Image (cartoon, rainbow, N blue to C red; front, side):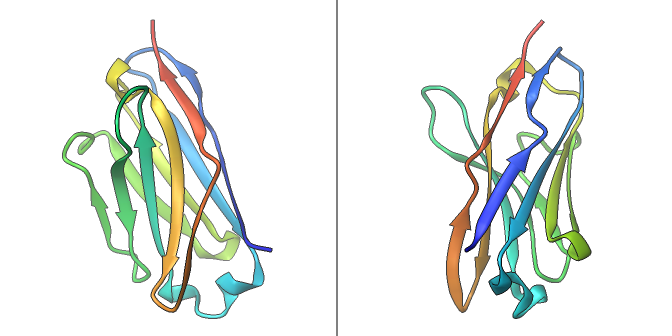
Length: 120
């Protein structure tokens, strides 16, 4: 079975840092490892889901303007894990962060999400 599990969320003070992890399991990820695209989304209370960062199968990355400069997405192919490093966190970064994996020839898969709370 395919499963994506996020971890690393928690409560931090403004200006603090967190590193989120998204671990993928399932044989489908080994069929064409470089063909998978990974995304981090977030959804704050009362707001719509927002794309935060993207990493392509070739390793290219893209960060949303709202978090650019304080965020870095990376991947570990050996572990089938994608990371989101967040620095200089602000209260407005409070949200549930979810990862999404997509391949052009297969269905996309969502993780369950991890809560990030930025508060003094």
